Amino acid sequence: MTTRTFKTTLFIVIASLLIQSCKTQYEILLTGNDVDAKYEAAFDYFNHGKYSKASQLFENLTVLTSNTDRDDTVHFYWGLSNYRFRDYYTAETNFSKFLMTFPYSPFYEEAAFLRIDCLYRSTYRWELDQAPTYSAIEIISQYIQENPKSTHVPICRKMLAELNERLDKKAFENARLYYKMEDYKAAWVSFKNILKDDYDNVYREDILYYLAKSSYKYALNSTESKQRERYLTFVDDYYNFIGEAPESPYRKELDVLFRRAQKALGQYSGTDDELKEKEKDFERERKKLMKQSLEAQE
Image (cartoon, rainbow, N blue to C red):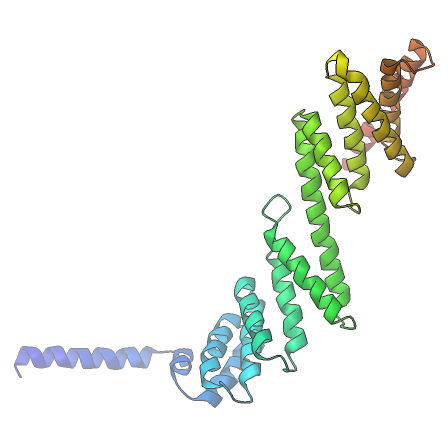
C-alpha cells in the first residue's frame, strides 16, 4: 500500500468515525433495532409534544412489532402523532388502514372518529371544490348510524350541519351569480332546481326571494307578447314566498313588485298615485334599514 493510499484510507476511516460520533441519540434510536428502547422513546417524544419525531419512530416500529401485542398500539399512535402534528392527510390514511387491519382493537372507535375529524379538517371553503365535503358527509353519517351512543355523536352532528350549510351556500351563491349577471332566466331555473333538489336548504327564504325577483325582472325585460305569461309566473312565485315567509323583511319589496305586475296585467285596482306612494314607502324603509345596518357596523 502506497503512502498516499494509506493516508486516503485513514482519512475515510476517521471521517466515518466522526460522522458516527456526531449522530444524535434520536438518529441512533431510529436506525437501531432495540424495539423496547425505540417503543419507550416514541412515547416519550409523543408525551412531550414532539409529534414529528414520534411519528417517525412509530412508523419504524410498525415493521418491528408486526403480529405482536403492540401492533395495534403502534399503528394507532403513528396516526395520532400525525394528527397532533396537523398532517391530517397522512393521519387519515393511517387511521383508514388501522380500521381495516384492527377491527377488534380497543382503539377502533377513537380511530374511526379521528379519521372523520381528519376528513372534516381537510374540506375546503364553499368557493372551492366540494368533493372532499361530500366524502366527509358520507363517512360522518355512517359513523353516527353505526355508533349512535358514542360520546362523539354531538360533535359529529355539528360537523354535518356545518358541511351541509357550506353546500347550501355554494348552491345559493352559484345561482345568485346568474342574477348578478342579469341572466334572470338562468337564475330562475337555478333557484328552482335548488328547491327541487334540496327542500331544506338553509337559505330557503333568500332563494324564494331571488326566485320571485328573477321571474319579475325576466318578465319586465321580455318582449310585450311574452310579458303576460311571465308576469303570471312571478305572481305564482310571489304567493309561494308570502305563503312561507309572510313576515319576511323582503315582503315589502316584493309587495311593490306584485302591484307593478298587477298593473301590467290590468289587475291593479288602485290609482297610479297610490302605487307611487307605496313605492316611496318601500324606498324610505329600505334607506332606513341600510342606515341602521351601517351604524351597527361602526
